[in-house]
Image: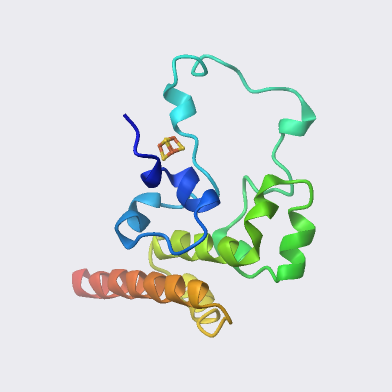
Length: 148
Ligand code: SF4
């Protein structure tokens, strides 16, 4: 039995508002969809990767760093997601999802800096997720200092 409201694909693609705080940590670095269930589904688990070029990763998105993606302007987002289903979530939810992924990243000055740079972004939705992510990063930084 699956509660679709907790599905990461739903939370990152279909949900328009804030991602419920109780699910954010469990999302890890999944910033657009998930589909891990396909690995376990009895109908799809034995399939092999397609040679069809249309199914190949585009724009190096399978190797991209979240910090770099978070720095994209809206123009870059629209350009680099041309022809991709990612484009349909729009730039605001793209930043929302990335903020959660960055909040879940191991602490680093670079990640904190990238988040701070978005603190004044003109969207309540984005700013709230950025504040949450910064609190997560600061918590990890302090824990690191205490254990050092
Ligand atoms: S494994 Fe499937 S059902 Fe579970 S969160 Fe991922 S996409 Fe959703």
